[in-house]
Length: 469
Image (cartoon, rainbow, N blue to C red; front, side, top):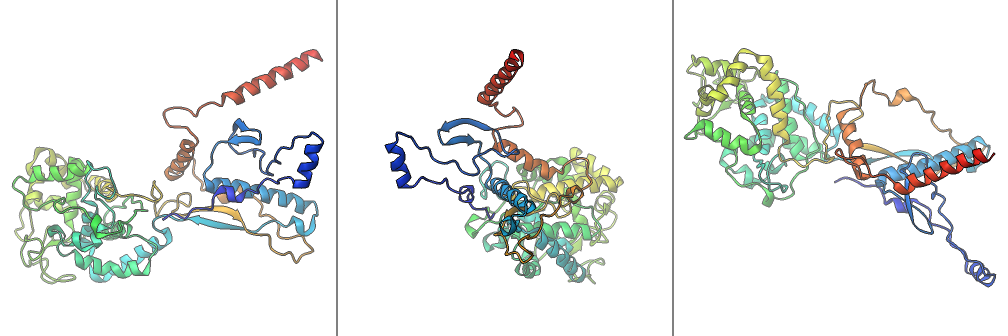
């Protein structure tokens, strides 16, 4: 989906070729012509070092990403134009006007932020927190770590919007969730379903009083129903051996016992309806009057509040109006699970911390990100979904005696985010550029031995001249 800049070769002026008459005259006089070098054949101060010349037409340089090369070339044009303007060159010295060209991600950050506000409004009026959490979970919970290919591996790829997957038994009732958020998708076409599902799930947790989740976005959607994962990858509420079943399902996703227990704590939200899952009572004293559509059986008394009461209620089991599934009871029956369940029942802060990490990990399972590192909606401007690259528009016609607009002065504070170190996203971008030039985290970039030899020879020549003088 990413929009790419034009090839860097199209930005460079072609080398001027001698005319046929000039060439004939040169041949007659015994001279040998060589192609004229490009006006950009000299290495900029900030470009990669040249490697050994491959032919007589000039040095060969290490490859650069097209966006960066376009920026360097146009910056050179701007500097030359600025020097001409300072020298009073008239209209010829007009500085080209700059514009920003965006390399777009899978989803647009601005539209995701607006969609988040719309989701909050829906939550206030429909009390649909639980079903939106379930929507995000069931889209990502089909991931299989043993399959490398995308989208065969399943995961958060927006596949749940298609009927073949929506009709799976474990997804009963999720049609209602799609009906709630489809108008938001129609309103913001610049976001993917995969991102929208996870955004809705995370927003529902946070709006219900849960922890702030370290989410990232940029997930790519699958394109057709044929790419949906097979049925049977989601957990069952009443398996024969609950603890073993939970491990089988969640270990397949790459999650561990702590994350299984932490994620189970999200049952503090919502109700189970017998007409959808086959579990629970038609209604209880906690659900008969809503809010929202009445009915079902909840795990907690305040089933629209995200806290650690799920673990407390399962541990005590004093209220028969509250639901306890076999997989819920397993959290206190299994010795390994019980360590974390007891901890979360006593310490809500520990539960919130572990849940936030587990939820974010679950939401990324199997996802294909564009950009590859994803992006956050809440971090500073240094890590946004769209990267702006500077290119030059044709110079505007001057109406001020040919002086033209002056270049904007460089102000360091404008580009400073008051941080002592770069953001993780920026570090990943710099690392990607380094690896693109031949480097890697495990070894330094290969030395340019030819250049090193030339530097040594030049140094020896300089010392020799000093001694001779």
